[in-house]
Each structure stands twice: as C-alpha cells, then as structure tokens.
Length: 124
Picture 1 (cartoon, one colour):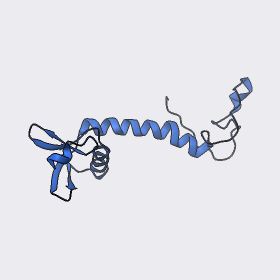
Picture 2: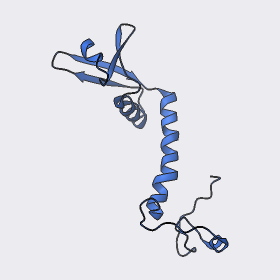
Picture 3: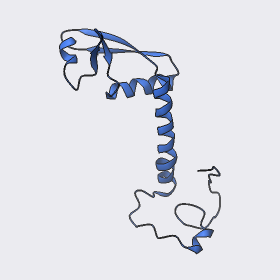
C-alpha cells in the first residue's frame, strides 16, 4: 500500500506514518455521503491491491457533512426543482424578458396561475 499511496490518484496517503483516506479524493465524498445518509459514526473502507489488503476506519466528519448537505440543498432548490417543474435549463426556446404584465405570472414558466400549483412561500 505504501508504494500505491505515492501515486497521485490513489485514494490513500501516508500521514504521520499511517495511511489515511485523502480528503480530496472521490472516495472521501462517497464515504462521507454514505455515513451521513445511514446516520452512522464511521465506515470501514477496504482497499485491495494485488499485493495487500488494507482496512481503514473512516469517521464521520460532521463539519464536512453539514457543508455538503447545505450545498446539496441549495443545488436541489435552485437547480433540480426549477428544472423538474419548468424545464427551465433544458427548454429549447429562450425565456422572454419580464415586463409589468408578468406580475400576474405564477411561476418560472411565466404562465398565469391555474388549477393546482405548487408554490414556495419561503424568503429565498
């Protein structure tokens, strides 16, 4: 493992004489997501090479998980939801500039309120 840890794209790095999961590696994000979603305190990461097997206990990083959740919530509310409701990112036509007549519009797609519609009454 020590030889593999010297490779820049390998998931483990040598810190103070022991191997640790790199915080900037995709596996770190994956492990922290799984630990956060499952509500557990740690994950045992198993790394196998033809030469050796290494098991590293990765503890939940509460600060990292909270930042990741905040970022994920923002992405969901500002990108995913608008796209699901209005296809605003994938629609072929450009959105028309807003005008005074748009005050009667209910949502991103600029149509008047009608029937059952979902609204966000939050501050943002």
